[in-house]
Image (cartoon, rainbow over all chains, first blue to last red; front, side, top):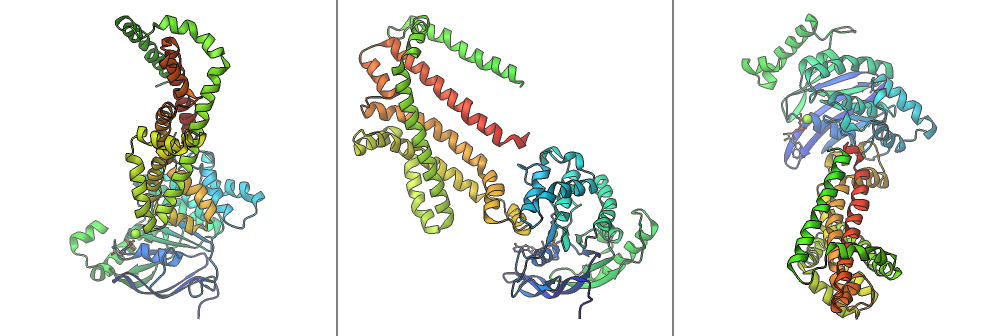
Length: 263
Length: 248
Ligand SMILES: Nc1ncnc2c1ncn2[C@@H]1O[C@H](COP(=O)(O)OP(=O)(O)O)[C@@H](O)[C@H]1O
Ligand SMILES: [Mg+2]
């Protein structure tokens, strides 16, 4: 039985590319308003997982249930979904506002509310002044903010984020990371956040699903024992990070040298 | 470069042609002097017959180009769609690309017996492979990542074509269009001369040449250059600047 506020349920999920298995078996549930990080080494199947959840690719096995609706077999209804990709994927030939509008046009949001909605979401992400700018005129951090705004725009049931801060410089990544939890609280968003950075996962998430090396399964469903608000440089974040590194040493096959690098 | 600076360079480039022209005039017997040609220019431009001939050629180029672009679009999508069509059309496209314009002109004129359709057909035939190849390459490099974006946000087929595919292939279309446009002007004149057309730029040019009206030959050349440059810079490049304004 699922809890009544379950937004996303993944059961017995497997993903293969031809003969190669990327994900051997995953089961987990995510509740409304939760921020869940998915942590795993490079190539363990994190992006494949998001693609299977979002319907970009069909899983080779298993079920994905969103808001009580089965996503596959039969494909009854596409959920409202937000996706923040590693690269921003804005259309360079459309202004910020126009990039958001095509998403609204494809949804059932009434047209007379578009402007207010766009202004509100851009305000939340502190990019209201770039409403009519071309994406090429924005910095990497600003573009990723637009991409997050786009994901939040249609009140999605949940948002998938695939290493969205990994291409940004550390200073920009820090400020966006800091804002992200606040943004999610304000909008009530449910987030599945893929990362390979342990500290980032500890800082952002309520729960961390730690995956094994590929073909992946869940190694541990880890509840982060630190109350909010959190401070990225807090010693307790570092402690939890060190704790996780200890646990994953065997399943990720880390030697002492690699361990220092991951930390 | 600032716009004013650019203009200044273009104008000086054109003015540099004048001394070259004058030297050519002095050292040959059949090239008229610039002064003589410019004296006759106002009268030439005031003659409605001039504009009739220009209009006819312009129409042939525009109609042929439009037809060639349409055929190129059709061929590109067909080649994208099926492997068999890709093979078969591939041969046609390569064949058309390699056909010398003069041969195409003679053939079209022979087949259509000098009728209006022949002139339009030859322009279409010469320009269509450029559009087919350009657009096919554009569609082929289409971005899988943007496809996924369209899927995630449930864009329908039409919004996807309009907002993603079309802007994505626009640079390919424009570069094909430029090539096709340049060739269209080259081939239409050849066709008009070979086809013994009664009207059109080529016809007027040949008439002047046959009767050794050298000033008129020069005038036609001047007007021709002006029109080709105007079409390129006044229409195609402007349109390009507008379409690609987001590049900033
Ligand atoms: N399109 C694909 N075709 C074949 N194999 C793929 C494809 N995409 C990913 N893989 C393989 O699946 C595994 C998981 O990849 P991915 O989900 O991208 O991992 P991660 O996002 O965790 O780095 C890798 O071994 C990768 O090589
Ligand atoms: Mg990945």
